[in-house]
Amino acid sequence: MSKTSNSKSDARQRIVETAERLFYADGVRAVGIDRVIAEAGVAKMTLYKHFPSKDELILAVVKYREEKFDAMFAKWMERHRKSGLAPLASFFAALKDWFKSPGFRGCMFINTCAELADADHPASKFSAEHKERFHELLKQVVQEEQGDKVATKVTPAIALLVEGAIVSAVMRQSPKPADVARDAALSLIAG
Amino acid sequence: MSKTSNSKSDARQRIVETAERLFYADGVRAVGIDRVIAEAGVAKMTLYKHFPSKDELILAVVKYREEKFDAMFAKWMERHRKSGLAPLASFFAALKDWFKSPGFRGCMFINTCAELADADHPASKFSAEHKERFHELLKQVVQEEQGDKVATKVTPAIALLVEGAIVSAVMRQSPKPADVARDAALSLIAG
DNA sequence: GCACACAGACAGACCTGTCTGTTCTTTGGG
DNA sequence: CCCAAAGAACAGACAGGTCTGTCTGTGTGC
Image (cartoon, rainbow over all chains, first blue to last red; front, side):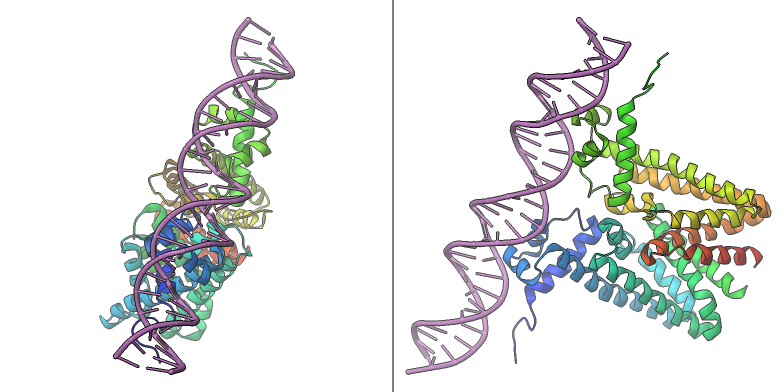
């Protein structure tokens, strides 16, 4: 029943996408509302109609970020799997693709938690839940390759390797931690 | 040749210690100069005489933080070693002590890098160097227990486990990742 | 008297959030 | 087909607060 342009809202989507780009690049506190509306090309009232406060915008952005990240990661992983790589190897290859992607600045969920400095903030809570979901994905990958028992045993440790690799990739400005993490993960499974 | 109070500067030290406490608790961007001087009980001009800009204060704070952290960590580790724990086990026990300490909010160096969002900022560069030094300490611990060859081989992976444990402890609000990391580290050495 | 630090006003920029208009598009009645 | 009504979003002024950084006095200990 609707047609030309917006089924939900054109402006809303533009705001979320712009805010996600700016928040990821410069941080949620460093980027002001004025900059978001300027770069999104919307009026201030339009933003405040869709998001009653900046905190609600931040929450909407991290939710959108999860969708976008999951899609990116799945696409990368799929490509490696189709080229013959094993499930877990594909996972770490995708991780490295992410580290090498232009504008990489670490995990937005970790960064946002660090910036907000408030574990009760809705965006912080959502970020913590995202990590659970991401580690669940990791567990499924391990499971597919190694079975239930091994997956249950080693996934928590591999998850630490993955998180450590993300942080180290940022601090060292290098994608290499992905390889270190992959080798260690395989060693944990073998051991 | 000086006497009663300040050999370098009493006020300077109070500023740095107060700023470190506030910056760690709430983040470097969330805490303003006004709050630092109010809680430190100094005049604004006193702060700006010692630190020409907030960026320079941030740099001084992370430098001080490294000293303080190293001392805390060494004290914790020493206690576990004196109680008979092996070097690497003492390291992870100290890590867990840190996670359980009141007001724990993760690694200040990681958090500051995330907030500054600028790899060229002096405080970001110092933070990256701190990580190198911290991992060097870890390597020495592994070396003492397992010798040069093993240390060179497994320390990079153990460092990822440690960083991952720090991040996970914050996001999950639990000290348990320290145990997961310890077990995985021992498994990597055995494997 | 002199150096140091406290106290607080001040400037100029920027922040979030509110408000008033204007323009454009869609929709529906005659 | 036409025109009016209504909704959505653009544009930008505005208020009230906070930010960094500067400046002028006042007090205090050597």
